[in-house]
View (cartoon, rainbow, N blue to C red):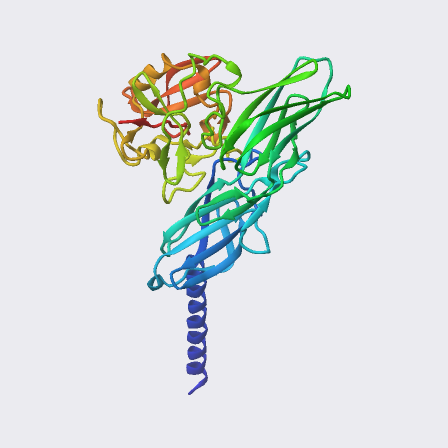
Length: 449
């Protein structure tokens, strides 16, 4: 073999090896398991942040493929180091994940902090499960709150200043089953005094509790040395739900009453049928109708003038959709609460459908439900108060988040311009129908057929 022939063979070998390396790198990239998370809210009011970690367990019929693999959030997905897909011939698997990550293994027990005065984040356990997962590019997983959040609003009619709020009667330890996922109080556990986080000094407080049925006692301390205590009957607090409690201080006593309009991670309903003997507000629709189960989440519904509406903004992330591309979280990705839901472009919400006058459009709504028409939104305006529309804002021109104005999308385009659709707009204390650009991001409430 002469010099030139040898050189040619060497170059071909280098190119072949390089090509194989590139293909292997590409294959590994494609085979990497990625989790696209969806959550209703964080206690702190924030979405997942870069470098947040979850623990992922993958179970196949033949056994565990991986146990509590640590995955890191990169701003759009959770990715694990060297975690690649199993062979498709091995069949589907069940994915279970929890946040925050624990190096001790998949969470089977959990305790909320008894002193939450510095914050509630460490007590907010999130769990997610998805079954029958086949090897694919990405896996969408919905993370649920497994604990209960209690928001306490203090109406202080005294001259003293509130210094501390304590909730008693609840067991702080829980057993966790991520295959559901769910959490329940440890049987025969010892109740504890949970010191609340001060959201607004002297006015608003928050505690995270383990779901259970118990008699609740609230203690309020003020700077004049007074200690006021009040108990309410045994109540069932459910996991993943948020309840509002009104505490009224009057001289030497304290009264407790649940607010008439409950704002929830998932609809928590009312702890009492008519708390405090209050009179229901006729301007607020009854939000205690049947719940709607859709894509692993529950939504409260309400009947308005004989029509069943979702009482919460849709928070469904369509299969394959990526946050930031036709689907956005309110606040340009910094906030995603159960009340605020997600923001959708017109095209994403319609899911390929076109609007014909008088026809119902399902779009991304569940089967048997549809995107409201302009006429249905106009009827809604005449039947509800401002409180019915969540203050999610909308994603406007140039990708800016407009927080001072909220919207609900319709399926109807403005006939004068195909680039505009009709929406219900909440602005400056008024509800109206407006024409806005289809590429912007709006909230969506589905209507039952």
